[in-house]
Length: 478
Image (cartoon, rainbow, N blue to C red):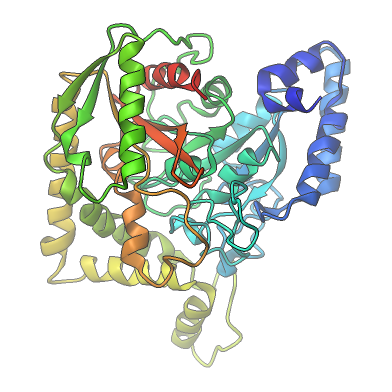
């Protein structure tokens, strides 16, 4: 029956036909999670899962069957979950238990989701490898050599790995500069970052508030569309939430792309792209062209400034957002408390990891007197230029096709001594994030080493349907 546990549709069909119960489903996934050694989960409570499964079975027996009734979902440990530990992968929040539920997880629970655990992540979502977590590194289930374990990508590496290893049928993630799309590429799964404002940020521990956006991982495009339409929606508790009607993505899903104009940005074709990734990109272009799409060349001239712009704006916002973790109201507090100032200083030094401290320092510097205009203000202006580039491009095309990542999954520890190399992992995903555009990574082809590669499709604001449909067409080759 393993094949039936591979998609939401198949599992819901079994449940509706009374061929399986939610309790049986939960036991299947509990068993898999307990046997797993990839460290995809930070928090996993078997008794809680079984209790919730029984409640869902009781509801079904009384005639209530919800849209994702009993579907096992992993939750990135950045989403606050009521009465369940939420850590952001950090020592400073290792014992934090929220008294409230994030809007996104509430939406999923209201439609019958069965949460099977909190997934691992880079600390405070700052990283591209899920190796900066206080709770250990997540191992990519696609690793072929037991002695050469690969990163799962980041920051949502635990969620991507959990879906890839079939420890759940979907998982939430957050994407600030590529934290859903890049791990999806590394782990060979679907990962979608919707338009900024489509999913509420309320109850998600903040990294960079003008960039953070919730999204989803799944094994196929249909499942991603089902989960996205449930997660999305207006929330008056989030001032950046978009008050728009959410389309029925799953019902409108199509693989017909005839006449769609797909742009290939010339600036993304750099000398540094490995040949196998470049060939894979061209293969995806040829495939879509054969299926009726019109391929056109476009220009995004300010692309080269996207990465430095992002690494000014995101740390600046992180510096502000993380100022609240001072050991006073909640979270970790150092035992060294000779004075209030000393307690603040030592708590933050002991509670934050090296990458988080690095970004706080960068952010504080670019916001400081004398540097604000030179760095932060200039970066905001360049962000507007990048956004305008996309607006111009979408006057000519319906979607944009690029590689997701400039590399395949790399060994754990390989780039940890060089932050710049790690930051370059986001080179293809950051521009769309700065513009607030939706982007999806879909598995397409393999590297020369036989590892999964992802293709990214970027769409217009709030046009998730188009990128889902193009992905649906590409998925037919998987």
